Each structure stands twice: as structure tokens, then as C-alpha cells.
Picture 1 (cartoon, rainbow, N blue to C red):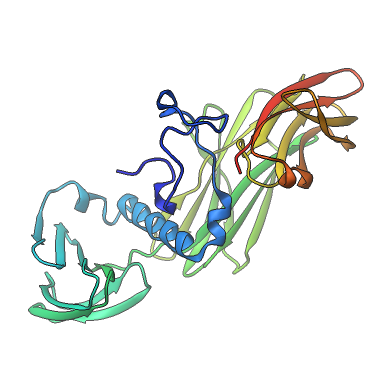
Picture 2 (picture 1 turned 90 degrees about the vertical axis):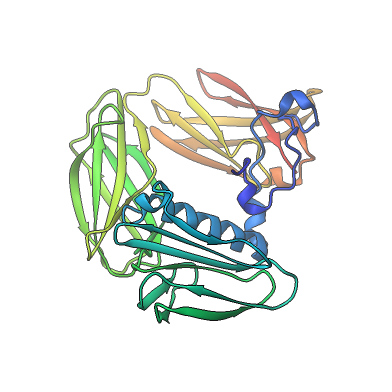
Length: 329
């Protein structure tokens, strides 16, 4: 079980409050997202491992392995192993829990090629007891089926332009991928395919939906399918049509360095952005032009702010909106 952001070795107290104080009443408060952790190679590696393990848990090839309770485990000593089986899918996990090199043995359920899921390499299993020497803290997750996801979806975003919706996605590690299916829904649950895009070895793709509903909320999701028929879904993107008033969102909030504002506007306009601290002292004052629809505004100067809570006011020719933003570090 992971507490918020535990997969990156999160070192904020579970009692961290949104205003930066520590209080036991804040155990369930939102915690600041430490984007700077991704600049730390060890934390990023830990995050990637957890991400891959979660994907394995929901991989349709292996989902039954985690619910059948058919296991063979050896948890004594420093060299530990677990073998999980369900139908034709099997997983073998080995690890050295010592601070020194250790050698142990494990018997794979079947002979042949096994895939090192976390390292994208292979080994050959004999079907009999085999010896492995692991360095301190070294571990491996082996699968008898190549369950590697054929692509990593880095981002999937949507925005409205005039009477259309534009969907864009950025990917990495596109291997043996066949195509992408873009799906649309009016209720966020029942989706239908509106476009198929062949994988072209690119890192960025886009599609313009000219037939989107002109009112209400429209939902999109992306399905990536490999040449063997395996697939995965992206997160769902929501686009609100016919905006009659501003919709302002700070993201992330709390923020660490650059404050990013998503502003939905029904008209083209010019706005003034003002940030004050809680005593009313003005720290930021700039004007910018906005377009109809979705606007993204970045404030790099906020990286110099001290940790704390601030008020952001957005003032246009006929409307003013004030929201609370929090600097986490």
C-alpha cells in the first residue's frame, strides 16, 4: 500500500497541511506534488519501477495472476523468491534483501525464454532449480510472456478551437505499436471510436474533431494497440463547450517553481494578472492577451517566491476572478 507519492520516496510529513504547516488534522489534505523529484535520478528510477509494476498489475495478460492466490514462495533468508501462476501466465520475482551480495536458487515453472520485465532483457530457464547471484538490493521480475507495454504515453491533452476540438498526444518508446484509437463520449462512460491513427514512429500526434458536440462536456480517451492486439488506455480528457464565464485553474497547486494557469474564456480579451501575499503586498503585476477557449499562462517569476499562500487576481474588461495559490517550496 502506498501513501501519496510514496513511489518517489516522498519525504513530506503525512500531516502536511495545504498552508505548509504540520498538523495531525491534515492527514487527508492534498499534498504538494514534488516535480523536482524527477530531476533526482534515484527518485525517478523508483517512480519508473512503481509505474511499470502498476501497469503489469492491470495488463490483461497477467490480471488473473494477482487474484488466484496460486503462489510458491521462499521468504526465508536474504535471498527471497515468489512464483505466481494463473492459466498460461506466470511471474517469478527474486530479490536480495541483504546489504551484501547473495546467491540463491529458484525453480521456474516452465523451461524456455523468460522476460525480465523491469530491464527489457531475457533469460533462459531450464525448468529445474537455477542459481542466481544478486548484488545488494538487486531484484528482478520475470514473466513467461512478453508483457512490455509497446508505448509510453507522456501526455494526452485537448483544447477547443472555434467549433472544433483538437486532441494532441506525446509518446515515447514506441515499439511494435500498430495504431492509436481516439474515442469520444458525452457522459464519460460510454465511448465510441472517432479516429484511428497508424503508429508512425513519431513522438507527437494530433487529431482535430470537427464533429464534436457544440454544447456540454465532451470526454476523450486514447487507446494504443500493439501488433499482437495488446492495448492500453490513456487518462480521460474533458473539454467543456460553450463557456459563458471564466473557468480558472492553477496547476499544479501547490506549485514548486513555475505557476501555470489554465483559463477558459468565452471571448478574446486582455487581462491583468496580479499576485499578492496574504498581507496584501503586491508581488506580481503583468498584462497579457487571451483568446476564446483554453489559454495557458505561465508565471516563471513565482520560482522566487517564498513558501506560503498567495492570492492571484485575474482582471479583464468586465470580469475579475481571485483564487488562492500555494507555493510548496
